[in-house]
Each structure stands twice: as C-alpha cells, then as structure tokens.
Length: 121
Image (cartoon, rainbow, N blue to C red):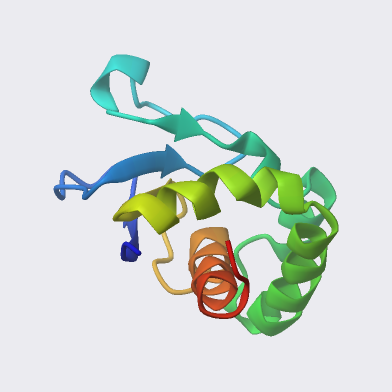
C-alpha cells in the first residue's frame, strides 16, 4: 500500500506516485499541460453547496469535515479510483485552496487512509 500525500496545485513541489486533482473546478491560472495528472476526480470534490457554505472559513472546518465525510460515504464509487491507486502505490492529491490545513484534500486524505486501514480489497 502506498502513502497518500496532499499538495497545492500551485506549488512546484515534486509529487509522488499517481497524481489526482481532487477539486471540482480547475485551479485558476494553471494550464492543463502544467499539471502531470493521472486523473481529475471531480466527483470526490465537495458539493458546490457545501463548498460555498464552508467558504474556507477555519471556524467552520469541523462541521465541513463532518458534512463532506457524509458526502464521500454516500458516493463510494467516486472514491474508488483513488483507493485503488493507493493500494498499488503512493498517491498525491492536488488541491487549489490557499489554506493548507483546512481544505477538502485534508479530509479526503484522512478518509482514504481510514478506508485503507479498515476496508479489505
């Protein structure tokens, strides 16, 4: 099983393994040819309603996490490509939020790690 890391789509940090964009919208100002992606998993992004409600406000993050996890649990097929890739090797989840601690990729990474530890193949 591989590690799961997260990285901002705007950061020039090297990525490891399979690389997936996990936002519902393409990062502003980034050309498609500038990102080496194995997939753009739009279906794992928070719903537009949840994203708008959260508004990247740290004080709403705990509630955002709970609501987003419910969305992910209701849509296991969306998570499957990421889970399958993580079972084969390292995975990097790319996101575009400025806040590196309060964003959907943090929640998704933790959710995937939990699934890898508890759900058999």
